[in-house]
Length: 231
Ligand code: 5GP
Image (cartoon, rainbow, N blue to C red; front, side, top):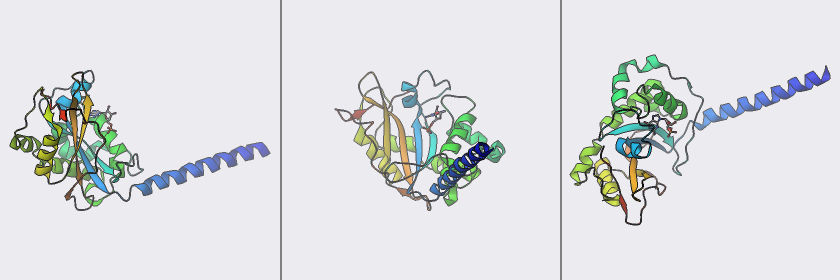
C-alpha cells in the first residue's frame, strides 16, 4: 500500500513539474524582438526538394510562415496558446491562403497551416497577430503589400540559370522593403547557392519594417553569386 502511495506521489510530482513547464512555455510567448515573415521562392525550394514538390508552381514568391523571433535568431516554438487550428476561423481567407500561402508539398495546404500555427502562431501574442484569424490575415496583408518581383525587376534582376551577385539581390530587396532582409539558400550541384527564401522583419507591435539580424551564411559562395532559378 505504501509503495502505491509513493508511486502516486511520484507521478503527481512529475505531472506537476511538467504542468509548470507548460505554463512557462506560455510565458515565453509574451515578448519578442521581431516578427519575421519568411517568404519562399518556389523554384528555389523545389530545386532541392524536387521529390516533395508535388504542387504546380511558377516563378512565384509565397509565404512560408510568420515567426516570432529574438534578435539572436533564436525563436520560441509550440507555445500553449490555442494549440488546435479551427478551420472555421479561416473561412473568410481560405482562398487567399491557397494562393499566397500554399504548400509546395501538399495540394491541400491545411497540414502546412496547422504546422505553422502550432509551431509559430501559438507564440505570436502581439496585438495584430494574436489569435488564429489575425495571425493568418495580418500575415497575408503584410505579404500582399510587398511587390517583391517588382523590387527585383527595378534593380534589373530576373530569374535565370546563371549566377547573380548576392549583394545586388540583398540591396534590391532592402531598397524596396526599407529594411535589411535575411536571405536563405539551399545548395545545388552547380556549386552556387540557390536562393530559396527571403525573410523580412517587422516590429512586433507597430509592424513597422525593420532591419533583420544578420543571417547565417547559407548564401555565401566564393564568387559572391547565387542562383535565382526560373521555374
Ligand atoms: P518550419 O520550417 O516552418 O519549421 O517547417 C515547415 C514544415 O512544413 C515542414 O515539416 C515541411 O515538411 C512542411 N511544409 C509543407 N509545405 C511546405 C512548403 O511549401 N514549404 C516548406 N518549407 N515546408 C512545407
